[in-house]
Length: 525
Image (cartoon, rainbow, N blue to C red; front, side, top):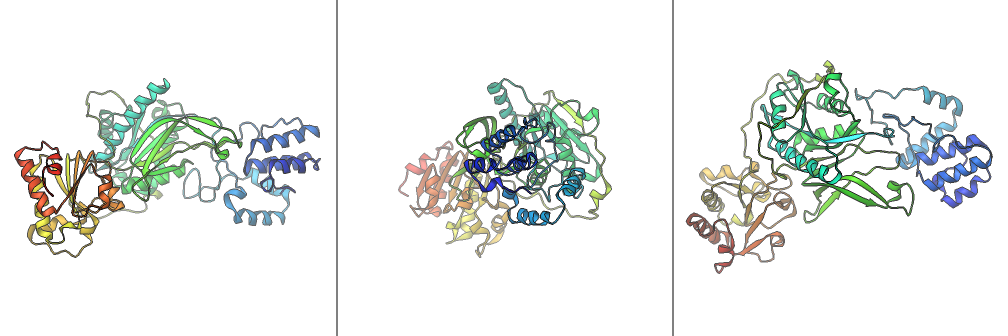
């Protein structure tokens, strides 16, 4: 422990205090404390100047020997751990400083739950020295022996991003699909057909269903380029530059675990992505107040914020001497369009090599029931969504919605959370259309059709999140001040029980050709 804590002083105050210290070891300890804390470039320079004044030539770069910043090494700081750090300092005062430092230097980082980079006790993780990062990786989730639609969507977006990356930076980097399962080599080849340059897969009959531990271990192992020469000689970098996961139940679970294991961050539930340079002035990121820095090749990850009416852009930017890679996020299903499948597209399919520990499979599924497939509202040209406006006659309201759905070539019926949680009484066959599986919104499905028709929907922010990416939004509501009007392309002030039959008739007759102006402008509603 040093006599001076640099975190407690401005640079000017620290410079003045340094003039009272003549001990090289104490100065070196202050330098290391500064690095572990606020890590100000001007403060480090002040310590180096004082070392030079008393005869030390400052051979060590910023107090850290060359080559000591390696993956897995870490240090805790007051800034990172607060009261915990203060308690640790008080405890350290009661021990012999020299012996404690020797023990810490000799001690290997403890294994935690089998992860090669334990994170439970980490408060700050040092980066790879001059780490090399490349490629965009996509976790391709599978189910029932097929790729999920969102996996194809992410591959298509990844293809678009990396094609633009090459155009902008002149560097060709790959889209890498990674997946695992009990029989997935054929699915790896499908990933190539949907836009991947490389597909890395791991087959094991025990991986038929998603399991937290083995899926995390395999994914991190793949990302680090570990394994046999045959399974890794296609790449020459430390970690992926970017990584995408689906914002499904399993994808959300895996994304957090893998990014933590890779010592990076995660933006969750994103609906748009692009790559461009970004200028920053935050001294935590630049290393010095008042300095601006341009960071190249930054993945901008846009997600709906808590209001649902604005979008936040998340950036994963490095700190000085600390790399946050891969820059990663989970992607809301339905946010992007898959590219057209090309079975003749060429790419590299690689079988990953790794020994899986039996302990990772302590949970065994011995019996299960397969649920019905449910309703997938994504991928349709038109979605007709009904809200609480059907309250006067819930059964007729559902039937009118279904009539309009039938009038289109490719349409499906959705509902709001208000119908799911209501006590409406439905007669006959229409009751099946009031179930949660058709819910659209934050806790339901996310859709982005060409045309979204919202009838009797108020426009709650939770619902907006689920349909805001639709190309054309038509709202029908008796309340001219309903919130949905603010984000609709066309607003029809009228009763859905009167408007829907007229809209259905117009579509069936071909008068509108999917253009809603005929209803929005052609009547007295």
